[in-house]
Length: 91
Image (tube, rainbow, N blue to C red):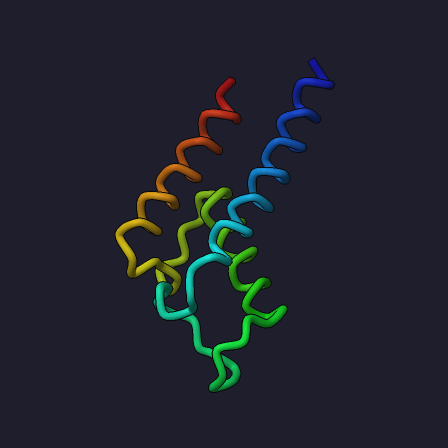
C-alpha cells in the first residue's frame, strides 16, 4: 500500500514536468496574467518557471484565477491535465 502511494507521487511529478514541456510549445501571448520580463521573444528560464508553476497549480487544483489560457487548445490540454491528475489520485 505504501509503495502504491509513492508511485502515485512519482506519476504526478513526471506528469507535471511533461505538461510543462507541452505548455512550453506555446508562446507567452497564449496565457493571460503573465507579464513578459523582456521585449524580445526569446524563451527564458523565467518562462519555463511560469509554465511549471501553472502546471503545478492545475495539478493541485488550486486554480489561481490570474493565470488562464487564452487559446482553446490550451484550455483543452489544461482540462486533460486536471482530470488525469484526479484520475491518478483516485486509482
